[in-house]
Image (cartoon, rainbow, N blue to C red; front, side):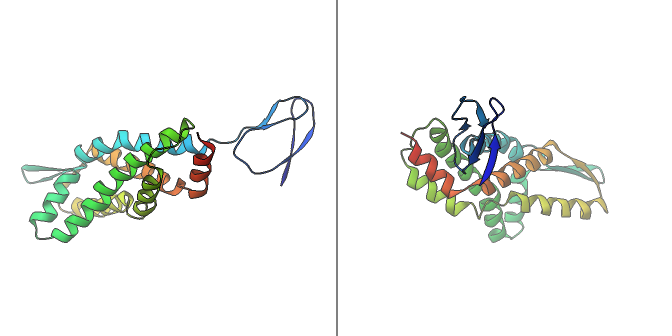
Length: 196
């Protein structure tokens, strides 16, 4: 337990850990403003959704072999794996870098938006279970590492041009990583029970 000092009247206040702001009981000055966890989670989910489609469709890399230029985005990689005889790998990449992140992002918004407005989501138990199970399968950051390894290998034999999709994919990996790691069951259920 920490002790806070009111800037308005100088009263010393014991700080217990809770979700609401701390007001001075003497002069009602806000001594400590608590971080709104649900709005942070919702912001990450919305940012991830805005980045998702550009990251999937814009070219990640372009490389030149002789006179031909080959552009590649996420769907190009999946097609390459599938037609190259790596169907199981294609399915894993699709699930971990496209399907699971998109479902995680959409369900996060459906759950956090009502909680942010102090309302209870209609299908809270279903949303919570989906997020809890999918959080281990959102692996865009692993795909970024594989892209970096590919860049190192391709630069030895061809000219590599970085596409705008690589930047979008990097930002998407960062926002989904933060979103998955920010998921705290205790705070989610506390927000649910405090809602109407």
